[in-house]
Length: 127
Image (cartoon, rainbow, N blue to C red; front, side, top):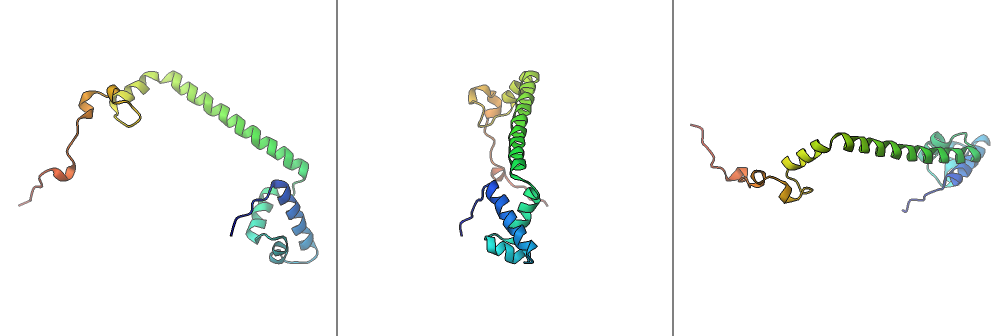
């Protein structure tokens, strides 16, 4: 069964319909069944949007967008600070650690030597 995605405005409308059903004396399961959602979905929606009006929902969305924007700014500043403080350490690490992201000519020759696999070593028997 395909999952149905509701917009935030639709969720508010459905929550209002369920609240009307509940105020008329219906139980939660039957009210949710009339609307077409599970009672777990109703409780999740009520936890997230409970008591919210449409104007509050718009304010909530703008605050979420602002929060995402500010988190990105802080992350960019932290990365820039780290890059300013640690250029020598990064190049040192790149020279010592062979990996797929570092070109082979930057890795010293001794670290490119191939070591035999552990199972190819002769096994010793303990006496």
